[in-house]
Every structure is written in C-alpha cells, then in structure tokens.
Length: 144
Image (cartoon, helix red, strand yellow):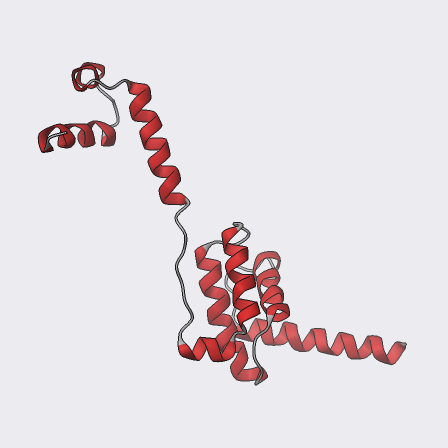
C-alpha cells in the first residue's frame, strides 16, 4: 500500500462517516474497516503494563506482594491507576509501620481502596484502618 492510499485509509477510519465509494475504490468493505478498528482497539486495551520496582520500592515491597499486585492487574481486578496508588500508599505506610509490605498488607490496601467508598485515600486513612484492626484483634484476644 503506498503512502497516499494509507493516508486515505487512515482518514476514512478516523472519520465519523465512512464513504462506501472510497472503501470500494480501495478494495475494502465497511465490515473490513470495522473489524480492523475493533481489533486495533482490543489490542491496545489489552496491552500489558510493564512496571518494575525501583530500588527503594524493592526494599519495601516483598516479591510475593508485588507478584500478587501484578496478578491483580493482569486479571483486571484493578486498573493501572489503582496499581500505582497501591505502590505509593505502600511506600508511605512503610514509613509509619517500619516493616516490609507483604501480600497480606497489599491485599488489605487494595480492598480498602475498592470497598471503602472514599474517593481519595490517604496514608492517614490506612494507618487508622490498620491500627483499628490491630485494636479489634487485641479486643477479640481479651474476650477469648
């Protein structure tokens, strides 16, 4: 396909109304174009998210926790924005908890982000959540 044909095809694909005459002249049907666009959009939306941890993130987040987080992204339980927010919150939470962030904590952060109903979650919210949870555990131990 020469560059002028490609430019014409691109213009057709991006236009609101597809010209049947131009498509026939190019040897393509409207269905061919729709199928191509659907495949193109499907491929771009399924593209993987390549992310490696920085050195300081690697010191804070355990490999199992990061693997779990990547798996949650791959199965579309979370999106890329939530993925990055979990890493950011994990780094901040580590400063207060003074321990590595493991799979259990990552899972709790994800659940809190998804099910809390709050738009913006801060590390303060998480600290309150984790300390409240610890107090509830101690209360349960006291009862038993």
